[in-house]
Amino acid sequence: MKVYHLAYEPSYHSMDFHFWTECNLKCRGCYTNYEVYDFGLLDDPVAEIITRERQAPPTKFLTFDQVMEKIDGYTIKYAVFLGTEAVLDSELPKLAKAVHEKYGSFNILLTNGIRMPDLTDIDQIIFSLKAYSEDIYRDYTSRSNKSALENLKKIHASLGERKLHVEVVYIPDYIAKDEIEKVAQFLASIDKDMSFRIDAYFPIPGCPWRAANKEEVEEAAEVARKYLNNVVVLTLDMKRIGDKAVKVF
Image (cartoon, rainbow, N blue to C red; front, side, top):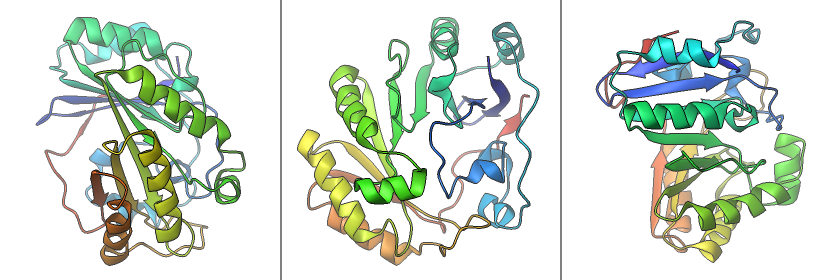
């Protein structure tokens, strides 16, 4: 198993399981090159990350039994599986099932959607769709988005009562209003009630893009709302909700 980090947020009783695998995307703006631990541990993650030197990947990992031992005694209402790409770990389904059965948790998976995950013990998927246009997606990630788009349709069809939440990062003059409109149109062709969030990009060292401001993210959201009924934003001026996370491992 490639779990290298556990963090717990006590007010929501949320346990984050961080996986480190060789991701199937090479995103130009990936923050994990500069911060390998949970954002909830940092007072101001945006300000801290933009000053970082590139970090070395983790080298110490927990076995399945070690993970279960580390989380013993916690109240876990939400279990969040994330990292470079959690679905690439073959033991993810086993861990999701064990946490489901022991804690009755609501299991949330963050994924780029390139590989179709085992959804048996997943209650919600947060699907990070980098772009709709093939050329932009390939330029940003170094691969095609065809499997991501097809898998998004499959995941929506297979979740049933469970939830699919799609997010995209607004990058000024790159993945901006026009591109986000295309994403919204694509999602609406599947389900106009699909949950969609637009995140403001914050600068990553070595990348050419400036931070996205609140006004342009909100403008993109208004465009998306022409097609979708559930559109929200995450901007850089928003305050932390809940308590500061604590490091479990």
